[in-house]
Image 1 (spheres, rainbow, N blue to C red):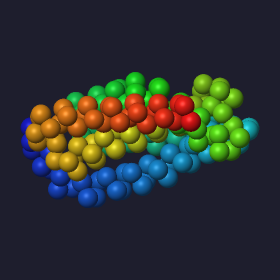
Image 2 (cartoon, one colour):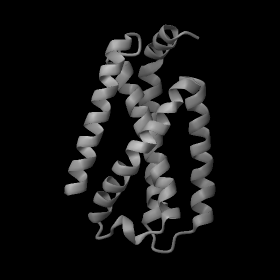
Image 3 (cartoon, rainbow, N blue to C red):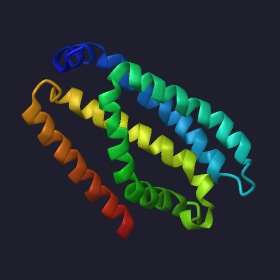
Image 4 (cartoon, rainbow, N blue to C red):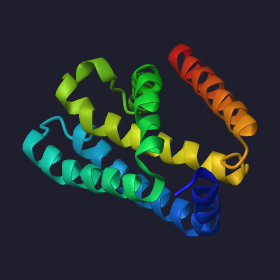
Length: 160
């Protein structure tokens, strides 16, 4: 499927795909966040089985819907996310009198993974809602803006 065909197909189904996945993933991601951070006695096996399966299914759907090439942005979001996720999770936890450094690294894996998947979907939604997928110059501009806004938001959370 050519890039323009992919853009047209996704544009037609975007009204269904994005709201469904963004709401669905927000629910599962919130559950994963609570399982990881809501209890002081985290059952790591339960955390990984329940959420690992959901994440696996999301990645399969992403590959089917968006294609392998587009999924490379998961890696880019991961690199951005290492900075941003930690600062945002730390900020969210601060509302509950907790901090990210108080948890072992293996507890962060599930919430971090959901965050990466969510930001990937958010990026795809921005590209489709701005019709940037079919215009390479506009796509590059939108992607650069996405990175700049992400870094700005993460930096604000870091200093707050």
